[in-house]
Amino acid sequence: MSDDKPAREPIPEDARIDALEQRLKAAREREKKRSRTESERKSDADYRSGSRVLADLLGGLIGGSVLGFGVDTLAGTWPWGLLVGLFLGIGVAFRNIFRAAGTQSPPSDEG
Image (cartoon, helix red, strand yellow):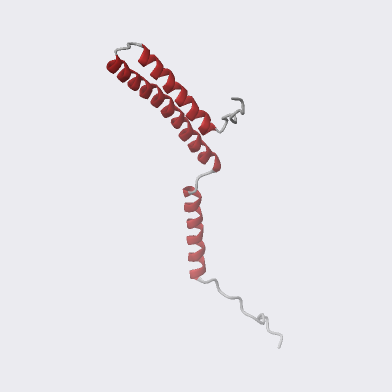
C-alpha cells in the first residue's frame, strides 16, 4: 500500500478560471482609467466656480451698462443713467459672487 502516489491527485487548473481572472484584471484596469481621482474632481469644481465668477462679473457690467444706456436714451440724462446702471450691475455681480462663495455676512438688525 505504500505507493508513491498521493491520496488525492491535484486538480488541474481550469482554463476558464484563467480566462475569468484575465477578464477581471482587464475590467479593473478599465475602471481605474475611467474613474477620476479626487484632485481631478476638485480642479473641475474650481474651474466651474471660476467660470461662474467671470460670468457674474461680465453679466453685471454688461447688463447694468445696457440698462443704464437705455434709461439715458429714454430720459435724456446722459451719462448719469449709464453710471448708475453700471454701479448697480457691479453691486449685483458682487452680491452674486459673495452668495456663491458662501461668505455673505448675516443681515444686521439695525434699522
